[in-house]
Image 1 (cartoon, rainbow, N blue to C red):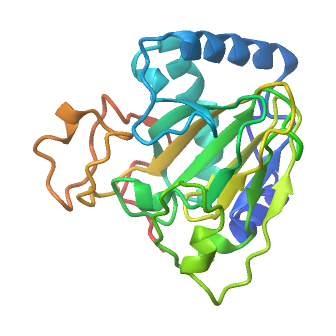
Image 2: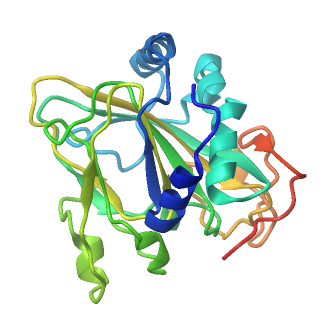
Length: 265
């Protein structure tokens, strides 16, 4: 597994809001990730999240809560370190994880940004998206709008069939999505304010991916009671503006120089 980043990769991430790392996993590590994720997704006791659309993705969220092996993957300190380096913060907590599988001839994923769905505000939250199969324009590769993390958007899309709803709702910006194909074992990181989507799977094979989102330590609850991030019992009693300290659901994955408040802006 890649354990460090080049200056060029960090600069590209901060300029564009995303970066690709094609050599993220070794072949043996890729085999392990595939086996762990496939077994977890096949567990029928894990429910689909509210609002998921099987015509777009087979989606399984927060697998780490019920599968210790998934937890070992997405809470690996080496992954957390990359997120910390890219965002330039002191420490990252895991926010959520999800397996995303484009089934054969699955529909495209609407362009969106992640942060408006989440229970906190931060300019420095991010997501890793790990390709478990080759990800191509033909089978559902991710598309990103470079620099869109700097647009200041706060649009919560409905993740419906209008693929360009976020663009229609926010005219006046230059939107030029670009695809980022990846070999199996590669990954992308993207900032939670970066507009992104995924193409249709126009093949008879599956396109599997495993993702994990990270939030800087010290973020504050914004009042959004989203069960994608926390179970119902964890949301009980949370107060708007309270510092996020749920070490059971959202432990610190990697820290350097202390775990101070989120460096916003």
